Amino acid sequence: MLNRNAISQGLYDFEGVYFEDIKGKKIRGFNAWQIVKSPLFFELIRVDTGSAVTKRRSSAGIARKVFLKLYSILTNLAYSLVSWIRFSVKKSKGLVLLAAFSADKPSRLKDGRYFNFLVDPFVSGNMLDRYVYAEESFNGDFKEPSFVPADFRIDRFNFIIDLYQRFFCRKKDTVRLAEEIAGMLNEHFKRSGGDLKINAASLAGTLQRFDAEYTCWKILLGSLRPALIISSEKPGTGFMAAALSLGIPFIDLQHGLIDRCYPQYIYHPVMRSLKGELVIPAYVGVFGRMHQDILLSNGFWDSKEVPILGSSKVEMNRSAFAGTGTAGNLILLPTQWTCFEETKAVLNALTRMDAPGFKIVLKLHPLEPDAYVEYYRNLALEKKDMIAFADRDVNIYELILQARLVVGFDSTVLLEAVSLGRPCITLTTPNAPKGILSLVDAEGLSDAIRAVAYDDPGSLSELLSTAVTDENYYQECLRKTAEVSDYLYSKEYYHNCGNLISGILNN
Image 1 (cartoon, one colour):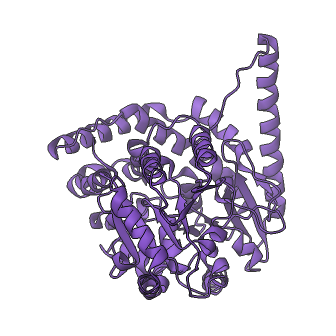
Image 2 (cartoon, rainbow, N blue to C red; image 1 turned 90 degrees about the horizontal axis):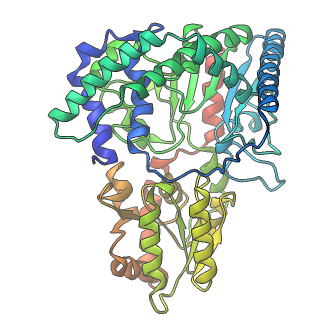
């Protein structure tokens, strides 16, 4: 099976090789290949982790089920109608739509409210005079109380989109497009020696969802007519396409790591001639110059389309880091649900060592499945002298502040930790032979983030012990992190965002 890097590279190469074949394939006037590209990538790399949500079986009778279904249909239709009326009334010059996702509220502020680190800063920083806050839940869960209360719950509107997709979308056209694209992809991967088999039905489902989202959102956005939309990870979606068709500018905020073939934002240079037919934002706001360099490297994007903003998470925590390390012996290990077996192997090996001289703080990823959470919690209880357990909603930046250094796989947390002045170790795997450096390897970064194989516990333990006990070595590590800090995450986040917003709204 191809690994993550090979899959993203394969999809990138496909655009160049089959450009003449894919350029004419459209839905609603937009390029069909670009619409399916990103969902296909995530489907191909998905690891079968089981569900993090336990679904309960309903014991209700048939009559009650029918009643509940009709009630759900009527209430969601009523909610959407009321929202449409409210939006029509609320429409005003300079109104900004903030489209949020509850999963982007990983922790609480000191007052107990959840803060969305992507879109809430535009409110807390007083950058907007008028705004509408639309929020989508994570698995049905809206994290509350919230710093910015939602004006509109996208889940209710998704119900209308579901109905449209089921009964009204262009199934015949989408199936034909999907079969054509899947055929070319299978031919491409077969020629390149890959063993992937692309499912045309899955591509058809993506195109049908796009068609439904585009149609429904165009009606709602046409009523609201915002001057600007701010969101994240929306390229290729019907939501963004609806905004583009109405001439509404869109800022898409960087959420996590972007490597040189990342399907959501990186396109082959030949695709530049199709920019007007691609579902891409007017602006991709990135963390720092490193990611700007990555997006600009092949000539698809223009520099004005990739403004450097920074990160609210890093910005809010920079003041707590004085530029010096900590004298403690805590090693922070943030989990990644995609690396569960590798994390188990690392923890089991380290906890078998005698008097290693350090203690591990195990911080769970916000999307960690329940089964994995239970395993980690039990391990921490069993090995409580060596492992401290930090649950999913614990503020990771407070843990970074306390940590001597951070150990992880290919998580963005490693880049954030370096930017905040903490040395890091990236654990390498067969899928990522250089760890996070397999994805981004900027000049000087390998000095701030040392690579060690996950299945070489002896070398890992030795490096950890040296970082804890050898102060001269540790100070040299700190110096290396300082050299790349600003390159990874720009400073003056609020100033940068404010300038971008005012420039768009005053244009």
